[in-house]
Image 1: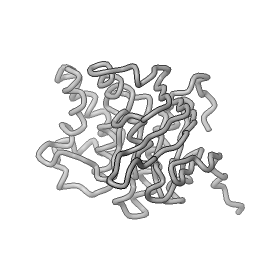
Image 2: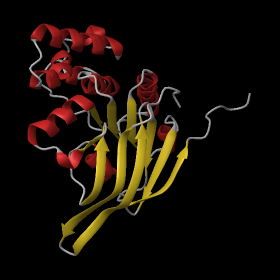
Image 3: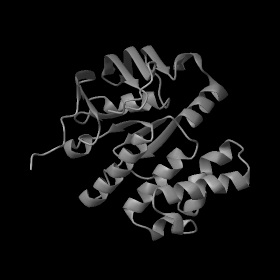
Length: 240
């Protein structure tokens, strides 16, 4: 784990619960979740389908709200933020990477990466400079004018990661980012996440694959809406 973690956690979750109304009654998706994630950590969220991990990630990304409990992001209570203030925090503090890439097919890779900056009113010259820099960072500097359907799935995920980083967030949330990729490409993408984490970006990643979770420093397992384990990832070193 990086040795320069801040004392105050980027994420603090206290007694968090989330329930949904269903035809069969109230369904508790998350139950009494308590979790701190410090700056600079790389955490894998694991668990079977229906365990609550995706609901938890939606709350972390401010895409959903808890039914009760408290979520502190960068020292601020998310429940106390509304409208533009919440949108600004989400846009500037959090980068999102999804399983399905979510690139706009009629826009170039450069424009896909730059898109979040347009919503922030960044001037075009600065917007293009940042997008070009990030495409170079993910190994696609010569593909700026290409369209998403002209590149591989692994390259599309690299573009999605570049887009997630364009607003210089402190926190990167990745939901099954290798789910649509073959094993070799998955390892390349996880290598890129490792590089970003070593640069100081806090990463929280949802996965059901043990080999993917092994790239994280810490593994948090969900089952039936509760955290059932929270432990450091065993060393990947293998004796020669």
